Length: 360
Image (cartoon, rainbow, N blue to C red; front, side, top):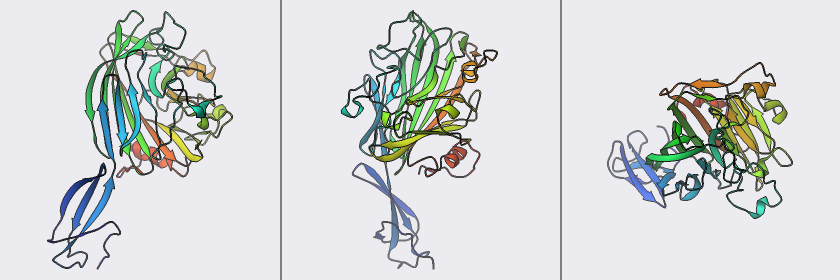
């Protein structure tokens, strides 16, 4: 006879397969009652295999949507008054380490002496610095006012869901020109997956122009993260690597690749962040605007600047009423890209390695 699985277990009368759930300390414990016939357990009893599952709680308030995993804060989507474009801040590891820069949102002791550059690079965001000539990437209240500066503002929160292992929200944004006219709407869904070792965020961005819009060829875009200074390649612990194995800003910046991983140590703990570009995204594999100072961005539009060839043009035009969708996955992991098995995680997510996908 096969041995019972090694797990938390309890005896229960009866036979067959049953399931019960109970809430304990903000976790869900799912108990599967296994047939006593299979495991030679007396007919008066059965074995309950219990698996602890993290809860992802997503809560909307007036100026943000907060995400809490297993009772601990993970981050907030910030969109209130004074915000020129929505951003998600911070990103945390499963161990609770903050993976994104604190400034300019907060002044903290551990960032004392670090550079206060690019205040528009806040947490995780999506924007571009040439959309019909309007600038959204550099749009920020701390930057010098510019007549070309547009704003991305929330128009409606469509959906907020909490759940076991995953939670999500869907929000609708207006991309407004400097006069306040909406030139494009954006529907953004962010889904948060909890695991014992990793945090995974899936981001789906659907853009629908209200008029013909052109994303111009500039390196200043598009799906961006500003990392904790401890992870920077310049003067800190950081390392940059792409799917082809190229390493360092010099060899990764501007190159097309399915994914890039930026890893190092935060407060002494080996940690990293990988960003995956979905194979259905326009101009996949995307080029990467990733810098040694901690900027980490995927940009499908900056062809001329990335190749240093002005004869090339990476601009893309989208017609009014026709939706274009971008999908990205962010993986916050322990260790480096090899120990986290980032290549396999990408292949699985992209659908190239078939089978059940699990959050490690």
